[in-house]
Image 1 (cartoon, rainbow, N blue to C red):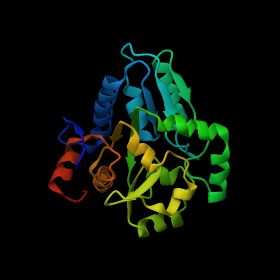
Image 2 (tube, helix red, strand yellow; image 1 turned 90 degrees about the horizontal axis):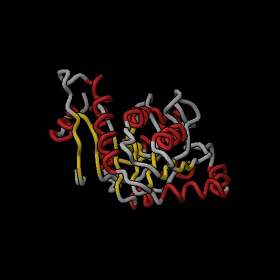
Image 3 (cartoon, helix red, strand yellow; image 1 turned 45 degrees about the vertical axis):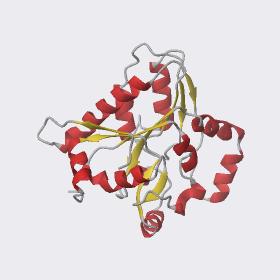
Image 4 (spheres, rainbow, N blue to C red; image 1 turned 90 degrees about the vertical axis):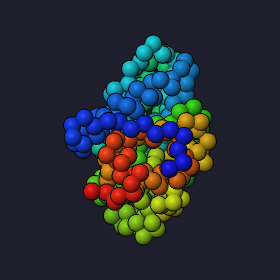
Length: 247
């Protein structure tokens, strides 16, 4: 896949897919914690996968992190998966850390609203801080109608149809891409997040994804050139290597 490193979480329960997320979250939390040093600038997205990772992080004596949001928030969604919540929890876990919040939705209703948000100095400053991250922790979303980004943001069914028509296979940090990892532009002028180029410039981008249903999205994310480290589960890794379609 052209990645610098892949971490595969072993599934001990006879390849039970229900065990995939906890196993992947454990592995991702351990790897991420090992990368942290005093003063590390870490940006984080949002979602259930990253929430599971955050819940398993161990402070391990590190302090003084700079924690920021890579993308705006969700309109809806269960408690604990919003970007600002994850930023706050990580900043609280590591003493003397600084949190930078992005006070905007991930997807807004129109380009005019996006322009208004981007004209705000607090939004500009938050995105600039996120773009200077040393480490970015992101999830990989697929195009299923029940994916978090479709369920919990201002993405209409017509928007999803347009994305699929443009070849979208997944999303990362609220931005969509096709099977070759190329940006799909339908929602770009409505998205509040660091750009593809800014994400690609982050020294270490850790993408976390569990479950074979995300294989196509994972392949596309890897081909984007933005991901350095992939953390996934054993069954998904086998499907990625073999080229088998999702179950």
